[in-house]
Image 1 (cartoon, rainbow, N blue to C red):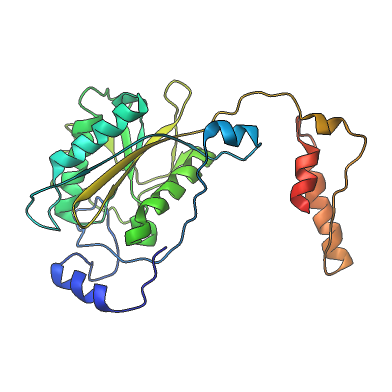
Image 2 (cartoon, one colour):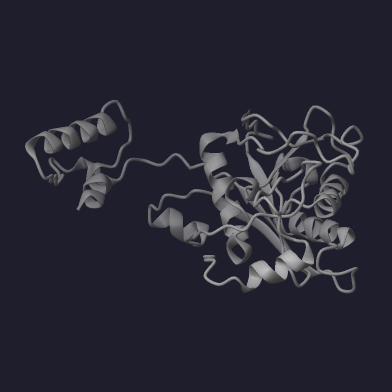
Length: 283
């Protein structure tokens, strides 16, 4: 969660030159001039995969690997350490047991500064694109351009974006890009910051994404997320019961009819739907 309740951080970050005068995070754009602050809250429920499958939970994504490190000595808060960023990505891939080519999207830290963005894009290119073919480009984006920098909650906002992108199998367009950052040689590496919604193609039938988050103190983090492919399982034995109670309530008869119609549409034509779970949820 991030709430902007006092002016102190505005003053400090403005003096540092970190905050955009127009309040926009123009990530990956040549006119990037700092980040726009944002408010927001994200809640994540983490659970062992085996436990979630056993309990019949809705699984939105898998955490395949994570890594953290520290910049150490650098040129200051606004000058990231590109080599440390490369190392944390490599360590996260090793923790996941995956190769760079297994990842085809990265939700970048992408605060919207010309120097910071250029360093990060170069780090992503070196870590992910050294042996990548043009047929499998790395797509990159940053939710900060959409909702601003949530500061302590920035990473979980990125996770939420990845989960939604996995669900819809669409990589969202980057907004505010008029001219891609000219400090990076986009022709040298197969790396793209898409400006249109792009179908998310799978690699070996699995979609995976990297997530970068870098703290003001020089702490770097990278995580590898993967779409969950459910195992085919027999319909729960509760579905063999003769009847179930599906409670409905509304403020008017018309609203009640509308709700019943929505339930009917949700159930109609579906196979393997666990009616017991549906009715339990309705309670």
